[in-house]
Image 1: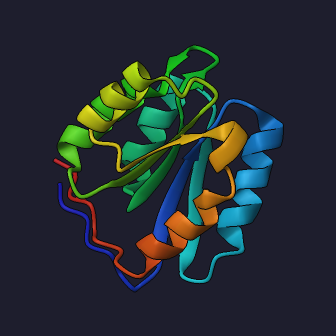
Image 2: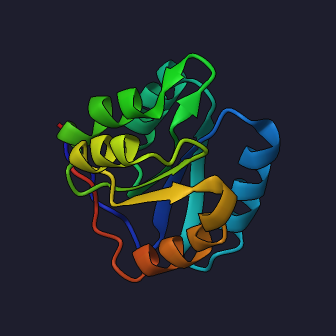
Length: 136
């Protein structure tokens, strides 16, 4: 199934299991001109289902979820949407995790403790080139 972006708005899906961090990220995304938050999830299953049903152009993805790994989400959705922008945000910023996420299709791998403010910059950059995702 193909999804074509209707306008220049970048649709962003947020995957984060911490309600406080999810609220902070949602507020950040909502404050970016040209970006629209189209969904949120805190579990692997809800994230996969939500991403597949909303067809966003970008995903902000927590690596450690309450019921598994964001890497599971990435591996489930990225092959069917290779134009999808993905930024992984984690407290587990090891080289092994970085390599696994980048190999699975992540564009960015960010440490929550030091890189959190970069989310705004990254989403703004993506809004300048919101390539539509193709979902098969």
